Image (cartoon, rainbow, N blue to C red; front, side, top):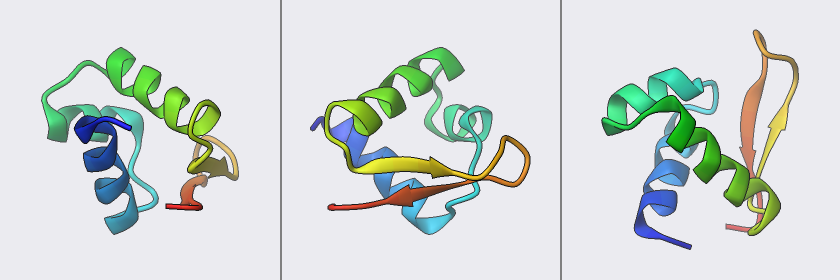
Length: 64
C-alpha cells in the first residue's frame, strides 16, 4: 500500500461521506487518479468498500 493510499484512508476515516471530487480537490489530484487508487484499495487490498447509493452512500474501512 502506498503512502498516497494511506493518506486517502486517513481522510476517509475522518469523513466517510467524502466524494471522489472532494478528495481529488483536497489532494490536488485528478478525480480519475483518485478513482484508480480507490479501486486498488477496494479490489487489491480489500480494505475499503462503498455502502449505499451515489447520493447517500459512504465509505467503510475494514481490516486496516
